[in-house]
Length: 207
Image (cartoon, rainbow, N blue to C red; front, side, top):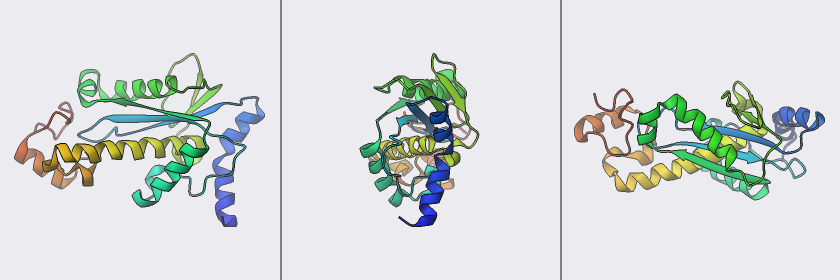
């Protein structure tokens, strides 16, 4: 690993290291993906990294890593972390309760599903009320190793879900757009109408 990469990763652990100095040991990062798409679930991941293990090379905000390079980082996170979990909220529930409430709910569920209860949680800007202290960090997936790791887990798993849905609903080409409202996706919505996996409450789905 190059010196510049090591220094970048060290900076990414600043939040975690400060929390460790303040007496916290089990620090969970949590993030969600899929808030904006017209189809598919919203997915959140929570993870407790093992600070004693080596730095995870190329760890970064999932949006800054190509799909090809994301997979090996994803595997390394799962192999080296203390514990991790995911939660999913399907389109029908998103329509029933709103995307904002679904966003909070999926974050809570991911935290609650961790097999080891964290001492504290840091999230990507989402403030949730729980029996565990949750600290929201603006642009946390760019500033915190734990949140970045959670964003990668959530992104990879949601992409796999959308790839599977693309086989069930090939007309929408989910394998390329992952449910987001691309020009082609909107065109196919007009041609075929929405599927059961679309969010009917989102603008562009029904009109």
